[in-house]
Amino acid sequence: MLKVLLVDDEAPILNNLNRVLPWEEMGMTVSGMARSGMDALRIAEEIHPDLVLCDIRMPVMDGLTFVGKLRELGNECEVLLLTGYQEFDYAREAIRLGVREYICKPIHYEELGNKVREIGAHIRSRKYKDKLFNSLPLFQEVPDNGSENSKKSSDQLMNMAVQYITEKLSSDIGIEEVAGKLGISSSYFCLLFKNRFSMTFVEYVTQQRVDAAKFMLAHSEKSIAVIGSGVGYQERRYFTKVFQKQTGMSPKEYREAWKRSAE
Image (cartoon, rainbow, N blue to C red):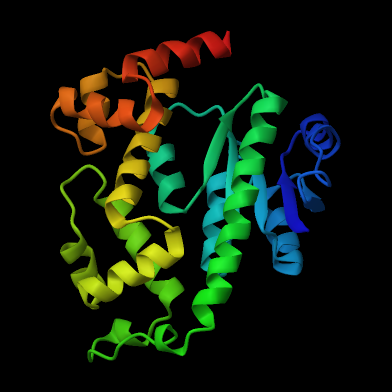
């Protein structure tokens, strides 16, 4: 069973999250609940959750700060944010911290359940692939190229890669640039990256850009051209083409559909 930590300062929402979703049916168990980021951090250190459902807006320590502290502790659990925030900075920070998904309040529990199932499938797939990967001695060590990063684990290298990619999301970025930043070869970077994310570098960057664009389309009134430029697509037509291929609808259609669903 995958372990889940629920975090929300509103007791009714916390109780609903625990009670409404069919956790056992989804192969999960709620191992902890917290009403503040501080309590959640303490519980996370004890139970090492596989998945965290967390509100962004909380007193003392907000959701993003909590997730940041989790990452500092080396906890790479999947995170699903419950959010009402409307600024792109929050989307960028969430992506940098490796947040898997977000869902907007008021919560639609059927939609939430579907997203939790998807994340659960991803976690199980990654656990299996990590187990397979670590069973191969050839892949257990980073090639020694004399750099400080050669002593870092594959997880540390990929965390650094994610942070760098997120910071450069609005610019043209390639494998050679990121691998050079990490101090490893492009071929080794591709090997580590594919194992960690189950997709190529280009697929990952595209997904992150589209996810950031979806957040902005849903939570702001910025123009489609401005949003496209903000996630690395200077030409609106090309941005629309990529977005439509990933989501099945144009940016305009996505924004309109989201507004209808929120009514």
